[in-house]
Length: 252
Length: 294
Image (cartoon, chains in turn yellow, orange):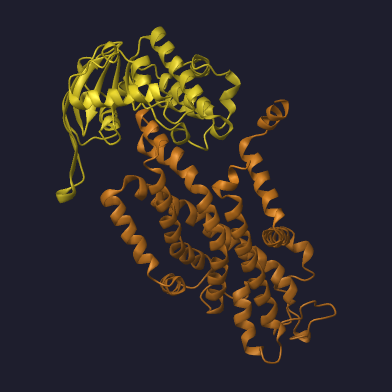
């Protein structure tokens, strides 16, 4: 288990007059084993934070620490085994021409791990799929199954921190519940630290211990789960967001 | 469920090849292309058994004989059987096509995918080089190369290869640009995959279908360029039975003996047409939307 500390994270994309500051100055910290949510409207910079943390974006300033080490100082191999990410769209995150076996064996080969067959079988059973699925291609899997494979791919390197970029938003409601249960179950068994981006406050309520409300790249307020009920947020935007979500839920 | 299990037991690439062939046979035009090319390959392999005479066997008592009798397509100015020369010529044509494709495909893919994936200065330099090659008419550029290297079949192949990789590189780069920001590439990066591994394992397989189509369509142009070089006397040298060179030699007797240029010309036309039709068919067969129907 590792904690996550983000301090003064700033990122500007583009150059010259077209430069846009996506994250002006973001700081937060996540306890080891905690599930931390990031909510906010589209374009508020939630996914950007995850992409900065995983160094998919490299041009940021500030400091991100995993445990007691800065991400930038971590050797690549160690970083990969500490931090993995599950993407939003399971239709885009699996290579269309690679079988599940290839998807799962690639990271093992890159990291030169032993007992590859055993590890692959364990990863695929952990996400609730039969071992025979190793020989399937993505187009032979449903959306939920694909997302399970994507989770298995993230798990196979045994990371301690999982970044979840709206892992359920591209899925059907019933499948969403399955995937969320799987993620909650995995955390209970293995003690991951989760960082979860979501639009859906109901998902955040179910999964996260604490969450940050974001607006235009800024964290306006960090709330704990029990403050959702009765809307105990103090910042006007956070109140508005939670109100809207509660109204929407009661309207359904 | 059981049928699915047996289906999965067949190796993936073989299954895909079978599907593509089946798809090609469905449309008459691409089936025709496939047939002509299969015949071409068959003739090239079994040339000594098919050809009634040797390609160099002269019969000076029977020069410029009209088609018919023992000589199906007639004889040329040295009494050589044109049909036999055409049959042996398939070997040369196939050699040119396959050598050019083997050289051009990997070079084009390498330049295109690396330029597209790495971007930045490398991309600019590579693409400007491609631009320079593209801005010459390929026949003229081949002429320049052959003039510099000296006329021979091998030099013609090198010259054609040098002029036909840029379109492939362009295509591979354009394809790569659409895939480089895909989530599966990001996932591969997060797993610690090196740049060469990502290009090789994630990007090249996605570019292959369109490159394959382009290569097939390119083969028609390659045949024409090779024949053109042969005709200009800069490709295969007489007495090699290359089709373009045969036309060049027959040109002097064209008015009286039409068969000297007609049959090699028809052969070039037929094979060029066949590769074009096959390329068209492949475009349909390898289209992602068609792939999803599997």
